Image 1 (cartoon, rainbow, N blue to C red):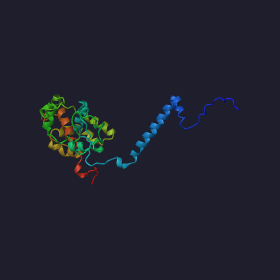
Image 2: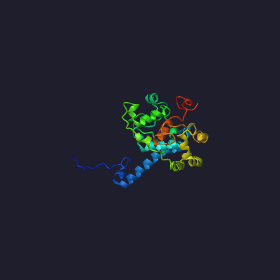
Image 3: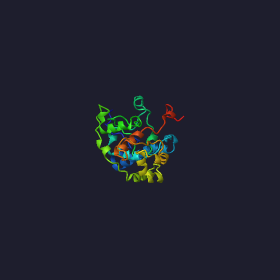
Image 4: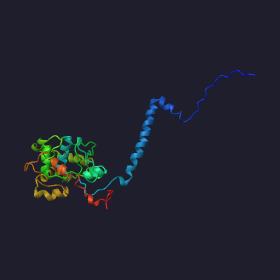
Length: 258
């Protein structure tokens, strides 16, 4: 005996978690809210621990704010776009450490606004260039890079040694950085112009006060026009500082202070 054919019935979809995602696909507002919630949770998970882990803030002896002349040089460094071809971050890789020196520490950039780590190296990394070459070498290099590095593709900056350094507003620059957290004192801001002149002219009478404010800062005639600060003088003062503040002999292979 045959039974009449039963009408086919499609199986009733079960209400599963996988099917509930359809509400996100059909409603763009809910989808956007969901994305924002997911990103917020992920961001909080990554960021919040940094406020509680003291190990994330590496304290290093020797780091100080830039002197007025060094700060002026850094401003010129940024203005001329030097960061487009030079980084200031040595990575903890064997080939980089062997070529440039000890890998960079976060504390070395703690007063940089913005930092100059970079990612592109048309030219060599400059994190440890300080005290590596003489002032005259830097001056020749800025004037005509190929006079000291024949294969260099760097353009020359001969006008820097002919342009008088404008330091009229360097104190204002320091005052703004102090608001951003750089430990410039009112005394440093007030003495900004005289300190810049002192550092670039080897004024022995003012040296003790200057050295007290900026320990281990170079204090000499930088090879330009005696008694007249130029933009090249300021840039050279900045370059001669890079990588010289930390005594890496105090560190072991893991960069832990002994």
